[in-house]
Structure formats: C-alpha cells, structure tokens
Length: 549
Image 1 (cartoon, rainbow, N blue to C red):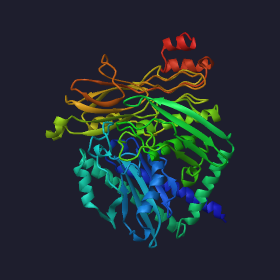
Image 2: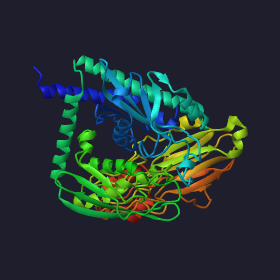
Image 3: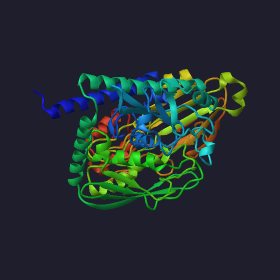
Image 4: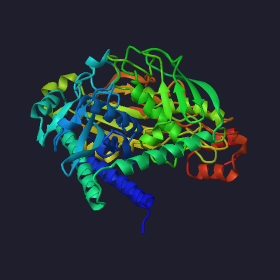
C-alpha cells in the first residue's frame, strides 16, 4: 500500500516529465534557430494560485525565473471565472515577461471536469519584432519594436487573427514569427493535455495537495540549506565594459536564518543605450546563481525560489524602469552571477567558481537597409556563441559553454541553411583559459562572411572585451574577447552597429574563463593532457607552468 507521500512524489515526478515534454514540443515545432537549435525557451506548470510547480530542465534562467513571476502578474489582470477552455493569454512586456520585446510569454488555463485547475506557460524568442531590432542602439523601448500588453492570443480556441497580422506586419521575418507563435501555442496545449491526463489517471480533481507538497517540501529543503550557511553580509563590485563608459555593478549579499537577500545599491545608473536591465531579469539570473550553490539538488519551483529576495535602487542599470531601452538586457543581466559569486566566495570559500565569460556572445545579423527592395536578400538571424566558464574548485572550467544562460551554441550547418552566411572557421582558442591549479574554460575562434557577396549588418552587445574574467585564489585572468574585420583589422568595440562588407570576414573571439588556485599547484598530468589536446601552447606551458614540451 503506497503512503500518501509516495503517491504525491510519483505525481511530482510525473509533472517533471510533463513539463519536459511540453518544452520539447516547443523546440521541435519552432521556426527560429535560436529556439529549435539553442533551446532559448521556458516551459512550466502552475497551480490555481499561480505558483510554479515544475519547470522544464530545457530552458534558460532568464525565461524560467521570470515566467515564475509573470504568471502571477497575468492572474492579477484576468479573472479565473471569466476564462474558457481554449483561452491563451500572452504578453511581451519586458517588465512582466523576460526583459525584452522579442520574447513572447504565453499562459493557458487548464480545465479538468469543467473547472480551471492550473495553468501551463512558456516563453520563447521570436526572431524579429520590428523597430531597431536586436541591438543596443535604441534610445527607449519604443525604438526597439512592438510592445504587446497582456491580452488574449486565443479566445476559446479561436486565434486572435488581428493580433497575429499586427505581429507579422511589424517584422522582417513574418513567416518565422507566425510559426513561432503556433509553436508556443502547441507548447501550452501539450502541457494542458498531459496535465489533465495525469489528473484523470490519479483520480484527483485539483492540484492543491500535490502543489502544497511540492512547494512545502522544496521550501523546507532550501531553508535547511540556508540554515547551514555562515550568517552575515558580504559585498562585491564588478566592473564591466558597458557602452558609453565602464559600469560598476554593486551587490550586498545577506545570509539570514531563513532567507538570502541581494541588494544592488551603489550600481551605476541607466545607459542611454539598450543594455539596461529590468529587475525581473536581473533577479532571474542572480537567484539562479545562488540556487546553483545553495540547495542545488532541490527542483526549481515557487517553494525553492521563495527564500531568495533581490532589490535594487530604481533606475540603477539593473532595475531599469519603463520606457528605458532594454533590447540587450542579457548583456549585463548575465553578468550578475559573477557579481553574486564575488560575494558568495567570501562566505563559502572553496565552493564558488572563478569568473567566466558569462555574457553569451550574441550575434544579431540582418540585411542592409538598401536590401529592402530586394526581398530575396532579406534576412534576420540571431547567432549565439559562448566563451569559457570559470574554473571550479576541483575541476577545470568548461570550454565554449554557456553559463549562466544554458543555451546551446548555434550550429554551422543550420546557420548556413537559413541565412546567406558562411562560417569558415570555428574552433577552440588555445591559451584563452585562465591559468591556475584548475584551468579556466577556453573561448572560441570564429570566422564568418556573406555567402552571396552582399553586405550585412551586425549588432554587437557583448562583454569581457575590456574587463576579462578574473581568476580566484591566485588563478589567472581568462583571455578577453576580441572582434575585428579581417585578421589585420583594428579591434572593434564590444557594442554598436557594424556593417560587414561583401568579401570581408568577421573575426570573432569569445572570452576565456578565469583560473582557480595557484598555477604552481597544477598537476603535471593535467598540463601534459592540455598540451596533447592543444588547449595550451608549448610556450604557455613553459612560461606559466615551467614545463618543457
């Protein structure tokens, strides 16, 4: 005979399977390469109170943890008693959804035996939504594209055709956007069908009991992990490249008896460009970083998220208020884990990695303005490449790996199939990982050009060009990122609009992660392995580690 807790645990595990299937439905039906190839999504199941019970493992913290709060916001806008089977709500408001206009967030009520029992939700990135698009050049949110307030996308199973036509009319990739919206709808519907099926199988009429079990168990486990930590407040300042000037990100991390708070007081003010970050997005990545260290084995849901609280002064660059430009909010938002770990390393020495590349190296590309009259040469595409992660206390950093975003890198073959781009070189960059007892992860070396002899536009917003990843406890810096046109061209700044002319090659180097510990303590067998695998050069082995090749 199963105990009640055993049955509830089985249902919890089933919910985790349901959300993963839900996420795969989105990835497999999406049109945008950044979704179907890179997994830039979220998918989750929520109870009647808007508490996130389960999230798909596939997805990014910026989408998942913002979705956890966005559903509550939507439930504050729409009454449950007015909802009908087949309704789906949506928004791309950066201060509700995931921080910029290109991400659509959907929420669907799940009906079972005639009653709303919960909600499915998902987020994914649309390729283009008009305006200046995916770049940092906007002066405010109105420059950046089409903002859609919370509304009904589907009413009782009938698609809002006017809304869809408005989205398509405001895009350089209308067909891809339409396909991505249908993929989001399919994701919500897949989750709703599976959730209702699970409830029928287990003969339950509501999610109250299993929801309380999930939330309470996760909350207690997370608080127990916090209780075991040293109590106090630790501060850290991270200097990042910024756009017009270097920017200081400040944090004060306080570990109390049953909660952890993070305050961004002292952080630089807003930029005039689109690198500002809504607090929901900065919170999503900051809490993710904390969760990776504090109770990492506890599933991510409303219970395990509840003990973490993030604040920041209004209109500091990590708490941008509307109508600030926020298109490239990931550039600084994804630096917050390194900021958090600067604090946490003081409280938990030997548990926190060195700094990494962190900000994903995003390459939004599109046709030049004069190509508007030649539709066969129009395109909009967002490529994603990663640098190296910071070395860990007992392991080397990971090379060409997205942390904290978790997105997969853009694939060469897929890129060349959907856009007039030829990638002629993509390989790891030797010696780019910071030296140390544990070596930082390596960055990448990438070359690309037009495949049809046409100019194209590049919209840069990357970090770690001027301020490379720091090592920890004696570890060395990772290599900085570097961007230039041609092998002998001058280095380009990390942010701005660049025209790559026909015949020119864009040379792109992603940063390496910082090293961990004294390089003199690195094991000889690890140095020799790095030499054999080409991760370090003989010259570096000799100068840094005193090893003859």
